[in-house]
Image (tube, rainbow over the protein chains, first blue to last red):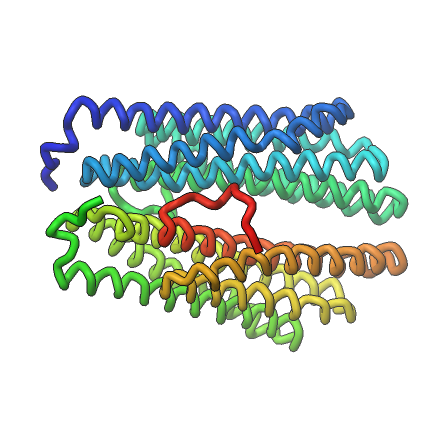
Amino acid sequence: MTISPTSVTPHFREDLAALKQELAHEGEVVAARLSSAIKGLIDHDLDRLDEVAIGDADVNAMQMAIDDRAFKLLALHQPVAIDLRMIVAAIKINGDLERIGDLAVNIAEAARRYFSAGAVTEQQLLPRMSEIAEAMLADALKAFITNNLGTAQAVLERDDALDSLRDQVNRRLVDLMRHTPDALSSALELMLIGRHLERTGDHATNIAEDVFFVVAGEDIRHQVLGG
Amino acid sequence: MTISPTSVTPHFREDLAALKQELAHEGEVVAARLSSAIKGLIDHDLDRLDEVAIGDADVNAMQMAIDDRAFKLLALHQPVAIDLRMIVAAIKINGDLERIGDLAVNIAEAARRYFSAGAVTEQQLLPRMSEIAEAMLADALKAFITNNLGTAQAVLERDDALDSLRDQVNRRLVDLMRHTPDALSSALELMLIGRHLERTGDHATNIAEDVFFVVAGEDIRHQVLGG
């Protein structure tokens, strides 16, 4: 495919770079909110949890600004090939990041209910899941910013590790429910938080798949990948 | 904004219409799979559940064909204004539909585990949730096909009803866990299925929000809507 003259103006390149930077920034903000929600859980810090639960407006404003920039780039510069794929991927990634922001809110709300039900030692199982999910998100965005397929591939592989950790955590929580019926509600909220972290990993996986689409120009979402 | 000459050729209009029709068809297929998963649950029909669990390849193929068509439309016709918004919305909706297909698989797998754990009468709580989620999906797609904001608005309102029904279902299942510890695993799988149905409703809501963006050209995702 040929690149149309309008799409290689310096202004276009600057706007593309700015779009990537804005997404990277949005990613940092949602990762920090996720991390803060889990810290609030572990430290029993209700003020911190409330802060996460009410502070979603910034992310929403960022999301709308990024969508707006991406649409203007599409409409004004009519990009093709890798530039077109990158901008459409940015719109999709923007949606994934906004949902991760929502999941941080959900985690903070579940942690609030968890403390009302009563804390249990099994809460210590969750930070490890959160670390993996946050690292997946950071790497998926790094892969997008740098068009690095190796980094994207590593994110896809780590999603299996996260799912298997989630299974272990769930088994421990089911054991708790069986042997300590009074801890039922607490265990259910921890299970829900684990599921939110798993979904965070799924969104990071979506982002990594988009990187393959942008760089390779092919859709690997439903293909089996080599190791 | 002006419409560029290339974007109003008959071929372009035909391709846009075909894109909408393909999305509508994909929507019908995933709705049927969702419905089949719930029917398999209620009828204790393990063959049907297996069919849903293994039959996702069609939806994945449809999804890739639709993405491909949408990208070709963007690259070859360089649309602007409502046409551009429609095509980008189609790419996002395509992602939502594919995820609903995944949720049908998840439901079928959870139903399989549920029958291994032992059936309980509370399974009767789920078809109502499923009906609401399927109706939301059908209406969201209808709103997209016909650019109907009233229909889209009705979808957004029904999501609250679905969430509140999910809360009722969860309360019943927690009661079951408390009073019948042997039913713990069964109740957990039903709770998980309820959560998958709730997420189906969330995807339908995403689609309805995209309709507002396409038609009104504005982002209502984070605004409070009038009745």
